[in-house]
Length: 254
View 1 (tube, one colour):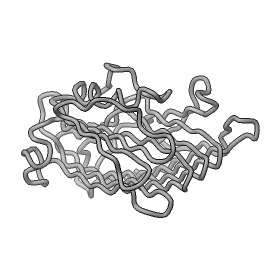
View 2: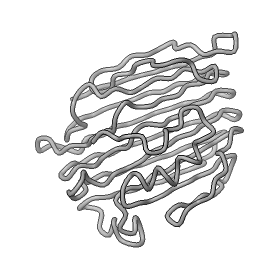
View 3: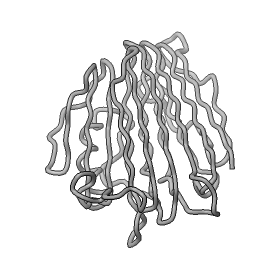
């Protein structure tokens, strides 16, 4: 399956935000939802089909113009599944944030089901004066099963320079992925990256979490845990000052 989705937001000239583009193809369906938050627009990603499955090629493009505020969430966890014998499924997310624009990416976790082979490529470019909060959570396998193969390749650039570059690989092909050098036996991991003038809300890191400044106007918080509840307990406080932060303990569909 091949599918593309695109959302673009711009200032309405009156302190608010309007969507100039909102389109998608199953399983990447985009829906504007709920009231406007902080003069911005909230959009949910709706899974219109199972997957991603092996062989799927999915693309999501996000554009935030000057003065616009866009918040992107999802209605349920994304479940990467094995499917037929085929190359790895791939989701490529490309996001741009103009000076004065704000993007909040707060989806539900990705679950790497046993036997899956999935790659997530994220490329975010923020102009000087733009603001970003980007959250990604991963669960390594459904309850009682091993993790499938999953690779996350993330690059965030701010003001023309690389702010954050990270690659994480889990699953049978990633030797030692659950060992002390990577996840330390944890079954879930999450990260929050902020960039720009709206910095992360301070919070105390727990024993399985770390918070550090990035080489630029940004912060990184990361946490591991036995399950997603532990990760959320560690990371939710760092998003608590933003209107799209998840409620601690909110349910996750698997």
